[in-house]
Image (cartoon, rainbow, N blue to C red; front, side, top):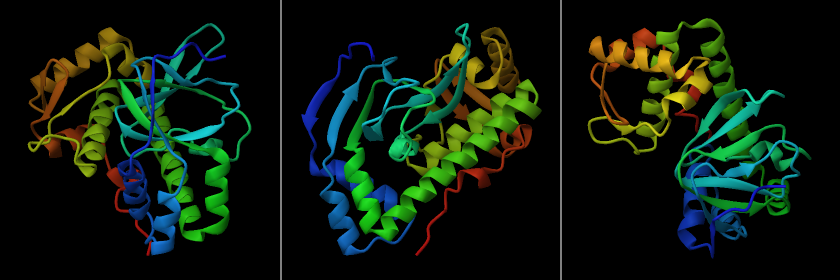
Length: 255
């Protein structure tokens, strides 16, 4: 069972489905009928406090959630409680799209910050997928892009050194937030992760994360002010990380 949640439930405004339409329209060219069908989805807007579990391993999922605001993360736990953060979920991401056809969750999802999501009952999404090939294609692309990001994270933890791993994570945040117009005009952004959480995503200790952040700052690649990250030299940071944003498929749009 999930722990009690301090969350606000309200009927959704039309702007919620506008977010969904805008997201799926970046993947395929939607017809007027597709847009009407998406707008008719029975969404529920839900705001969830930081650190709240949104999905637990072994839970039978009933809804798919779409991030409107805030951040979450997927994690896997070992039997003795050791944690590996396996992906970060940002505004515009589906949290549990894979559970559209899977009967049981195989990982946990936890709110990284206070987060607002639009929840859609799984039967409603299954129905819209069955009648609209374009919407089905858009959701399939979303799942494929998420798999691509997982492959890059596996490479990052398995084959890059500590400095490259951390630089790569900072580059990914910068690229994804910039593509969603969520970074500042100068490209800076607030990093929502603690050093402990970054360590759990990169296979490093918090002390090692702090040391590498200082090194990137000393090298003139980034600036730090509390959790605000400024990218001083994008090309140098990208080179230090061996970062190529191809795996994010940010321009993936199919007419």
